[in-house]
Every structure is written in structure tokens, then in C-alpha cells.
Length: 292
Image (cartoon, rainbow, N blue to C red; front, top):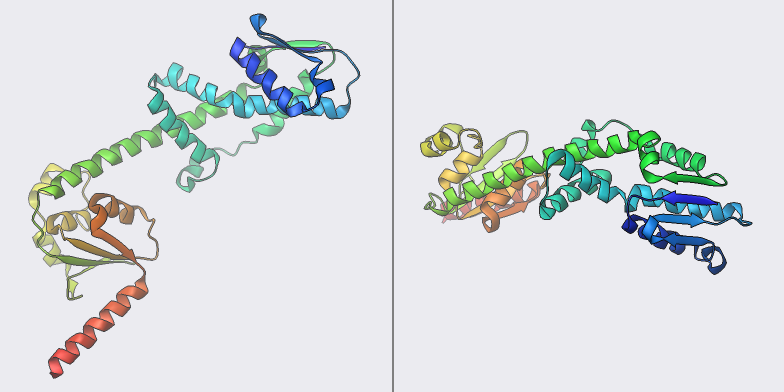
């Protein structure tokens, strides 16, 4: 007999239901008992194949690494970092998921290379022996401590990312407010993102750095000196064009995304080739007008 003592009635029910789903066999299922009042799941003695115990251990592995993982993330958020609000917890959990799924290349370097899966499976193999009784608490405390420490690391990194994203949203909201009260100094502005940023006016004539600097509203730099990039964001906010055409190889680079977030529907993003074609059309138009 194997007896597993859970931390709560809910946990015992979650594992019991998950195990039944994994076994998918009525005969096997009859040997699985749930004692809700004592938070215990019992696997009774009997002749069980290796396949049966393999399914039981796999179900328990999934319970530890998937089903209970979110609960532990939330416990860490509440107990260590005092995030009680469920909406905030959910936002931080979404960041954790994106890290776990490898979607955040920029913070991969902050995570140590860890291979926890073999450790967890080895602990489960060791503890699932004939006539054994164990509690989840003792398993976590003595055999899976490094796994819980890994979860804490993910939470810590996700909280840092969450705070940065909150600050970024405040920054974008503040600059949208500044933009809302400005009259456009130019209708159309073209920006080329290459090794450096180049501004072009409506006629696709390059605007030199000195010209852009003279157009910057000094109040912007005085009131928001930390946030505003004087080479790109400051001129754009000061000019407040009605339409901004951005030409870039990478529409997802941070500065392009920031400009898009601030100026919203005013921005359209294109490839380098579109700028070349637009310039050629402008040259042909000017040439025709000159000959006429």
C-alpha cells in the first residue's frame, strides 16, 4: 500500500481526480481510495504491473510540477512578497509562464541552468515503494527543497519584470498626456532606423541634428529628464506630427515599440525598401516639376 498525505482536502481531491484520469482503467481505479477528511489518497495492495506504477508516478510528477506549481507560486507571492491582490498575482504569473516557455530572451541570462526534472523523478522513484506512507510536506522539505528554491527564483525575476512593466506603462501614459495638448509642428515625419536614427521631413529631406535639437520643447526635458531620449522621443513629442512613417528591419525593437505605444494610430511601420521607393517617387516628382 502507498499512502500519500496531502496539505489540504482540496489537494487530495486534485491528485485523486488527476490520477483516475491518468489511469483510465476501471480495474486499476478501484484500488485508489480518497479519504477527504484526512487528506489522504491510498493505493491499495494488489498485483500491479510496472505500467500501473509508471502511470501513478507520472501522475504524481505532473501534480508536483504542473497542478501544484501555480499554488506554490501564489504562496511565494503572498508570503514572501505580500502580493495579495489576485489580479496582480495573475499578471506576475503570466510573466512567469512566458519565462518558462522561453518567450523572454532578454532575461534568460538571469536564470541559472537548472535541470530539476531528473531530481524530482528520482525523489518520486525513491519514495514510491511498497507499503510506504509519506506527506507532501516532508517530501518538499527534505527532497524537493531545490525545486521550491527554483520557483522562488522565477517569482523574484518575474516581480522585477512586472515592476519595470508598470513603470513603462506609467511612462507611456505620461507622454501620451503631454502629446494630447500639443499642436503638430509638422504633418508628416519619416524616421529611418539603421545604425542610427535619421529623421526626414515631408519632402524626404534629411533633418540634421541641430535642427531637431532646436525644435525640442525644453519643458519636456526639464520635467521628464530621466525618461525622455533627447535623440528620438524628445524631438518626436515636440514636433507632434500627425503621421509618422517608420522604416526598420525590426519592428519589435524596443524604441520602435515605444514610439508606437506613445503615438498609437499616428504610426505606420514599413521596411527599408518602402523608403527607397518613396524617395525615388519624390525625386521623379521634383524632376518632373522642375522640367515643367
